[in-house]
Length: 559
Image (cartoon, rainbow, N blue to C red; front, side, top):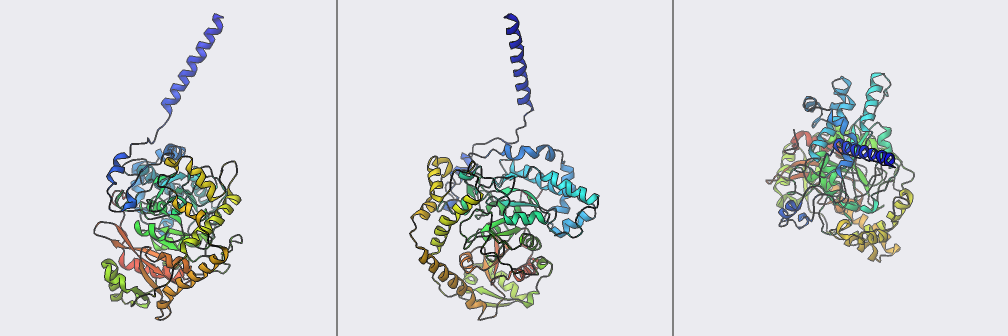
């Protein structure tokens, strides 16, 4: 008996020793902090929806996100980082590719450079933007494989420029090996195969670096709540002014991550303003394409009528490249077009002469916004023909019903096609509402009034078709009254000011950094054109970018 007790004692002591060693060896990269001081500081913010209830997520453990790649990133020195910075920071894709082809830079170094920045800023509670919420654990390995292919002369002879470029995705876009939450705890275990556009990116050689935060359910959950907030990812913050300026939304993480140089580029999505708003708020280039140019298959929906993914980048050249890498007809998406539109890939390399542009400027904005007025006048001095106009008053009644009824129908379709029953326990908007009510403090701190409005909407199928037809007609009339009458190439707007009209018209819009307000808040010039005029918008945007060179990296994120 004494012998048995002795053996048990040795076993227990050994187990305790192993547990102690394990705890000592465990690396803790991040610890939750008390964000009540930050929340209190924003209690009197002049913008009501920036009066935050919380900053950090109550459920996301950043250690789980960042530990898998920690060993790789920890070997990447500060000296190496600073040596590579001139070849990567604020450079466009063609410039980065040149350095790789010269042998001065590898794909692995490119990936580690961005990971180094993400770890440096996102694990520090004083600089975190709460933007990166998932990382591809295999991305360094995948980059090494590309380097090996290059070394062994196995790399494709003809490559899309996106080849080997690290890309971040908004977390409503399905991505193999990573969860797709749309920011909601109801989808916290949602794992699905690649969305159509992600498959295209991978076919063209892009490296998926990770996923970024967003306004929960693409900002169609709560009314008047902070943009950039999700129950899963917490409150996204703007690098140009953390807790000072809004991030824009709903592609908040896509905008903030690219502003802070966390990747070469990011993909966002828009229903009405969700690419244009965060792009302009974070001084990056954002394109909301014509509905049907890019597939929506595998993206958590709001509206099959108005939804579209789109590129968000630091410059127009990269925007054209990323857009081109996602193109392709998708037989599963009824809106997807088969027609090809040449000139998109090279659009950033062939800017239009400013003297050849005919542009429409809103008379009201010329009176009320000095940055817009000065910019338009500078374009005119540079040779552009400017036509000032006042758009017709058009009826936009029923817009919300499009979103309500579409989401009521489209979300169940997405969940049925992509949701694995063992992982996702909800199958409809009503079931999400019920799920959220079980723990409203954590799951819906700002309520879910928009979801409740979806259920309450009694618009009939026939009435909805009428609304969609009327709004498309009215949206086009809003712009066409000037575009057609004066033979204009594009209409000039600010940020997402006229995103709703462009949405229902199904017209593309490109926003390019225009400057900064006296407060330091970014502001952008938005070019709006007719359907499938993306290449021309990009060429005009590039000419504007070359002339004004407005983008400046956010202070504190340029080292």
